[in-house]
Image (cartoon, rainbow, N blue to C red; front, side, top):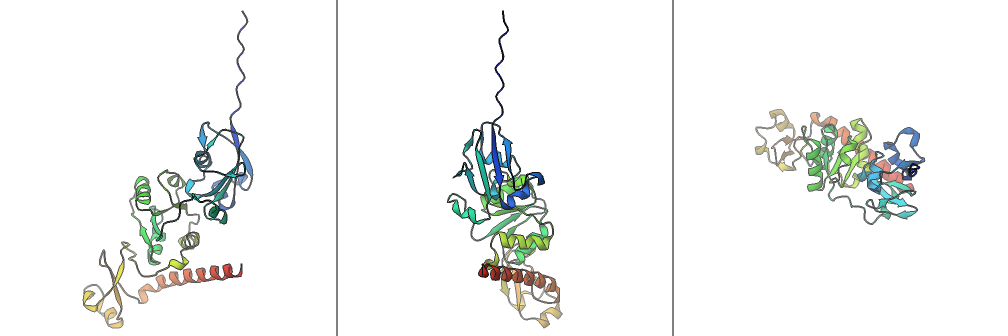
Length: 266
């Protein structure tokens, strides 16, 4: 009796992907700017196939499958052409289902971005930061309080509960704050010296009598404007000790002004 012939194995399902603009930051150098074939674990969705290539969903804007707009939950079966555009690009405005960034802009930062957290607070932005927060807590806070999650951990941004977030590209804090200001359009929203750098509480004007025990006598004699944190009681006043902070604020304001001038020309 002749042996039964085995049916030939079906080739794996594939789709062709092309990532645009700064989404290429997540790809190996050999794939940047190119249309490449990706093997699909069928069944799969657009979101899962994209994240399997290293790009977190919070960075995504418009997605086209075979030249038509697609949701991230669309199934992929094979032979599709997928074009992926970044969240922070003009094409993102063509996606009515894209979650709007929360107003006011509020942030939660991972444990490696302490300097960036302090600078965001310096500029007046409500910024949640804990030195011992784990990934689960960061994701929960982001989702529950509608905060934008900033991190250098790409895997953290792939958690399904995270709706708003971004991978901070820069490693230097001075470059990081400019990157975040630009990406989230913070220029018109700057409110320097309105929030406590230490605990994130709001600052309020304080009378001299309220700061007697908190401000050195020489500073009390030299200044007549003081603020107190309504949460931790930290006292604030402008003096030689704030020169470095003033420099940071001035640098950011100059940066914002230059960008506004360039946009006006365009």
